[in-house]
Image 1 (cartoon, one colour):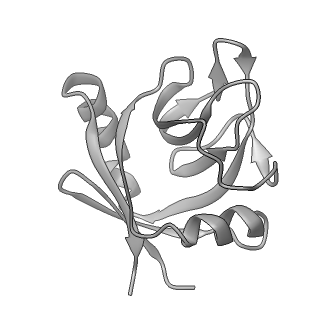
Image 2: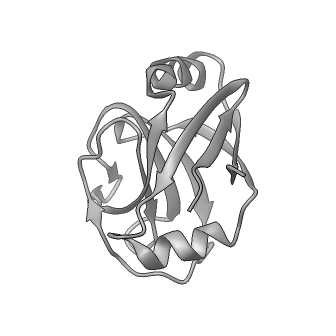
Length: 138
C-alpha cells in the first residue's frame, strides 16, 4: 500500500501501515481516509499527543499492542479501561490513563519527517490543539 500522508498544521509526515502485524486495525482505519481530527497533548502518556475518540468503535480488538511506543509509532486504543483514542508519540512515552498503564495497537509508523515530531509536541503543549489529517499518499 502507498504511504499515508499525515498533516499536522503545516507539517507534512509520511507513514506506513503495519499490515503484517495489525491487519485488522490497518484495514479498518484505511476505510476512514481522509480522516480529520484535533491532536492535543496527552494527559498521562509522557511525550505524546492524542486524539480522544470517546465511545467511537473501529470494530477491532487488540493486535500488535504495546505500552512503550517509540516516537512515530502511532497507536490505536480500541477502548475498554479508558476511552477509545489514537496515541501520537513525539518523544519518550508510556501509554497510560487515569486507570494506569494501557497498551494500544501499533498500526502506523512515521517514516518521513520524524525530525518534525518534537516540533509537533512543542505546538500541542504551547499552542494547544492542532488540526491533523491522515490521507492517502497517492
